[in-house]
Image (tube, rainbow, N blue to C red; front, side, top):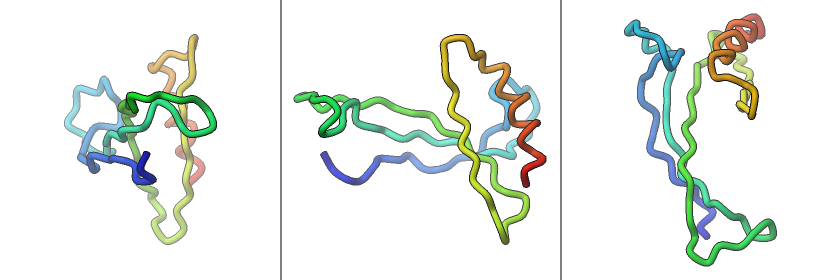
Length: 92
């Protein structure tokens, strides 16, 4: 397994997945990750899975902070994510 992650690059996308507006304030991309890591599990066929990521750049770029929001489940609907984004807007 290579130490380099495969990433398809950032492209403009809307902040909300289901937003019908043309607001392209976020950036989206896709990482291709190994299904198994050494010492955790083994996979002789070296299968991978694609992980979608979205970022919203900091308003204060001189002192940006990073906030990762990982959606879990079951029981956490993606519709709740918008509320979480709005709530975290005060962090900046």
